[in-house]
Image (cartoon, rainbow, N blue to C red; front, top):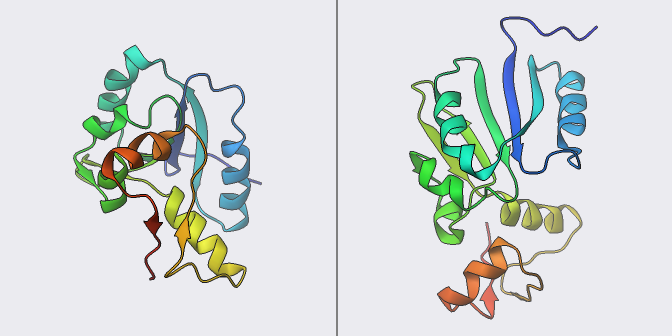
Length: 155
């Protein structure tokens, strides 16, 4: 039996709209399977409320972090206290960890996840170039930084 208690760490996914997300179901299944005392909930946060919600989450001691999705990935950058290299390079955040002192550390995990997935399937991307098709955050940011063709770094 999976029981949420006062010790349970709270995770969230922030989006607008939120009804289409499947992340909480998948994450909660993984957390239960691994015996982690945490639960993810979807939070429907409109853009004009994002800063207020983010500020409040800093003060929730049981809040461990969140996944950030559209349309908030770029707006959350300014709300984080620290950013990973990837978040700074893409000017976008899709994962936030609340540190013990309430500071928020933003990361961008899409590229890392993609590269790790290639490697798990026996494809070593180091030394190759990639072509990115789309209009999401990475497509928006990369051309302004003159990264094309973008070399893929190892390790």
